[in-house]
Length: 452
Image 1 (spheres, rainbow, N blue to C red):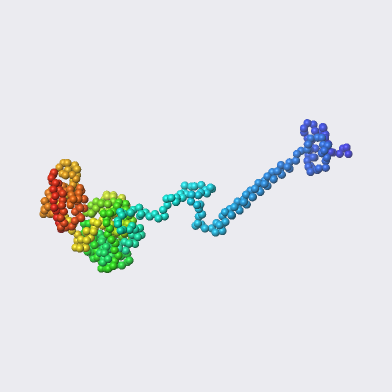
Image 2 (tube, rainbow, N blue to C red):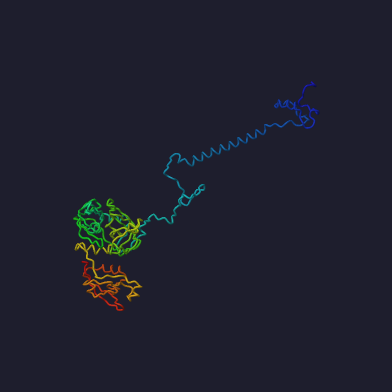
C-alpha cells in the first residue's frame, strides 16, 4: 500500500522550484474527469484551471447575436409586408404614390433631377397664352380663343389652284402648270380675295372650300402693283369672314394665319404675333404688317386674323434669304397687306374690274438735313425732283425744288408718308398741299389723275 502511486501526494523532491514533474502531470491529465480525490486537505498548489468555461461563454455570446439578428430580420420582414401590402397584393406601375404638397420624406434626399413642387400661389389653371396677346379693345367685340377664331373663320378660307401656261423656251416650249394659293370669302354670293400673283396668267381657276365643295372661279379683277385680286364663284349662302380695322393693330398682339401651304395642306392654321407695323418693302407700294406666323408657298392670299376673328391682313410674301448672295434662311419673318389699305382696292376691283392709283405727276425725294442746309430747302418735307408735263402737278403749278410739307393739313416728312396719304384718295379727288418755295410758303390745290 505504501508503494502505491498517489497522484495527489506532495513530493518535495519532485516539486523543487515551481515546476511540475512531467510524468506526474501527464498522468494527472489522463483522467481529468476523476473526482474521487478529497481536495480539502490538499496542501500543495492548486490544480490546473479548466479551459471549458471560456468556450461556454463564447458560445453563449454567439447564440445571443444570432438570436438578435434573427429577431431583427423577422421584424423587418413583418414591417415590410405591413407597409407594402397594397403594392404586393395589387401592383400598379402607372400609379405613383406621392407625398402631400410641401411635404418631404425624412428618408428621402432631393436630387438635381427632382422637379420642383408647384406653388398654389402662382399656378393658374385658366391660363391661356393668347390672353397676353390681346388687341386694342374695340367696343362691341368679344375676344376669342384660337380654337374659336378658327371655328369662326376657317370655313371661309379657300384653297385656290390656278392653271397657267409657262413658256419654257425653244427646247421645252409651252408647258401647262398649276399654281397653288389661298383666299377668303368676303360675301355670301361668292366674292373671294386673294393675291394678284396667285391668279396671274390664269387659264382657269378652281376653288376648294373647307367642306370639300369645289367651284370654278372667274377673275373679277387684279392689281399687280398692290398684289390684290378678287375672284367670283357662282354660289349663294357661302360662309364669310369680316374685314377688320388694321389701323387698330398693336405690335405684339395675336395673329392667326389660315391657308393652303405647299398646295397640299388645305386649312392649315399657324399662329404668332404682330411683329411690326408699316414695314417698307420694295415689292409693295403699301406699308406691310410683319408677323412671325409661319407662311410658306401656297399661303399667299390667305387670311391673317386678329383675336376678334377678323381679317386684318392678306398674307403676301415671306423673306426666304437674308440677301441674294447668301443661302442663310430667315425664319419667322412674314408679311401681309393691311386690310384697311386693301379695302379701297377690293372695292375698286369689284366695281370696275380694275384699280386706278391716284397720280400726282411728280417725282419726289425726302429732304435730308444736310441737303436742306446746302440748297436752302425747307426741312423737314418732301422735295419735288421733277414735274411731269401736263400732269396733275404741272396743272397745279408745282415746280422742281418745291418742298411739300402737308396734304390736307396732315404733315408729310418722307416719301412714304406722302405716298400713304395720297393712296387714301381716289382719282378725281382734290387736295390742298402746303408747299415751301424757298422761304415762301403757299397752298396749292391738286386734283388726282389716274395712272393710265
